Length: 291
Image (cartoon, rainbow, N blue to C red; front, top):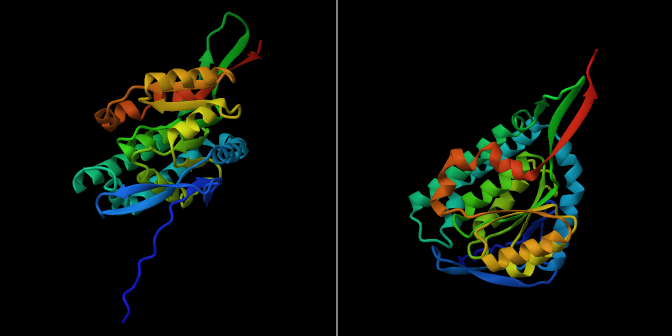
């Protein structure tokens, strides 16, 4: 019998609920240390970023108006699908790190728990961060949190999966749509996450995932007027300064943190309403009270 030839996998971008090739036709190599092979991923261009913003903008209204309960169910479904592909995700984590098999599966498990945690917060955010305010007069004064809109996400290279999931789930549970730039040095887990999201009842355009060079995309994300906020971690000071200057043109919110790798494992700190709050706008309503 002739020897069978393996079918090589093509890793694509995830835009508008579809897996597409980069408009530029460019790709870049990623070494899979565990298998001793090299795979190629699409290198997203400025046009791909614009397509992602359009998809996120189109999905924005529907996702924001969905009930917190429904968003929580969908995030929980993401956790279920990640659980189903736990071993495969562990293999993807081994592509760009020296973690032991036990450490890789621990990161996958922590990511599953993080999704479940934010799923639980989805229908409780309004009660926790909103409420009735005391005013000296015959009025009801109520503060209601609303999603910011389209959020760009720039996670660190490590922990590749847990950080990306944590930064993605927080704005999602509040009703924002997202554009996730995969970690430049370790993109395979985030790329595989796109396949998990595609089978998790997430509406098309709510999550978009781009792989490529951060320098090619980050500045254009800051310039784009339809992107309402950017969440980033551990950027170089020069990059962060440039990002803030470019974002100021469209009054874009920049949420930046310095987070060590071990800190991502602290579930109580990284999965709380205060990680959701930066991606909400507070609307205050006045209404006459009954005499």
